[in-house]
Length: 419
Image (cartoon, rainbow, N blue to C red; front, top):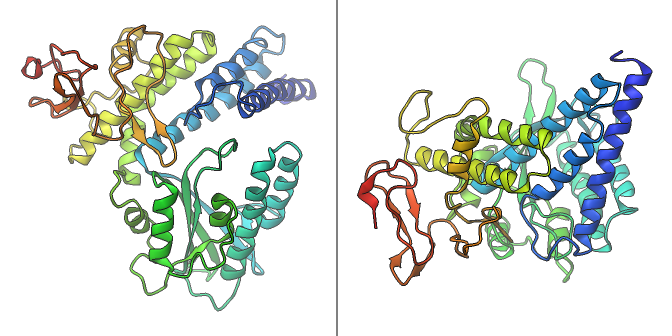
């Protein structure tokens, strides 16, 4: 019976097995057993946890399996969308911290945020690699400093703090590249203060972070003493000048930081998420049914990236997405295997993501990859000339395989791009 002690115990058992698989995978990855290249998304981890889930598929407590599966599916959908958000440099999430007696609390939480983060740091320290321990200390220091500023009753609403979080050093478990923007806000009706926080994906490298930080605060590195840069950034949240037009405006701050890089607004990312929803559903369904099907799962991830890129490119050209509009196909439910394969076998654009890159996953093809080592629209040339060009019919970018021609547009099928 759902909600019974036996049901909850079995759910806990399944989740514990999944967590063990996840931790073992990360442990092997850290030790270099999973290869030397750190991927921005690891489909091997998805396959591993769903293989573990499938071992519980026919247990008598079917409702427990269904509950654990649904929880895992929600986590996977969020992870895939976050991965796509990082490719497109968008706002990944928005959340709120309460302020009570000068202390920060997670919304609805009873434990102070700094205490919770400190406890998490202590737990992670027991399993973390030594290279990550300074970063975990820096995260606690970061929130202590943020709390000191926002907890001061003299701090004015609109005060803005940015926390830069580049990827960790080589061998670190922290591979994501983002920054958080915190704005002190006030409820006009109750005069209650709270902190609005937004997380943005970033494509900045360490040198660009240094340049941007010094633009916002010329004295930012005065305390730097040759330690790990990722830890320094985290332990030194940056207070934005209250007179700056960027203060109190997280989206404008994000646009300023990403100058020279393509990025997408939060509103446009809603359209991107909508355009990939059916493909994400198909990816998760395949994980549930056949988690060993590595080739098709990788093809589906490639299809998700291609669909997201197509939609984002159209939005950047101010073409809005509507169901039934011929310009962009928006699959709302599970997508056929044939359509996924067609989209997933198209070249995947390689995108710079700060200290790494996001590109297509191996689909088992024997021919050489046609994804270049360059980022964004610069895919270089081969013996036939430029490898990228826009279709005169649909406007989408085409990428030729290395030293090969294509008979038609890779997106709309127009013969006008044959080369």
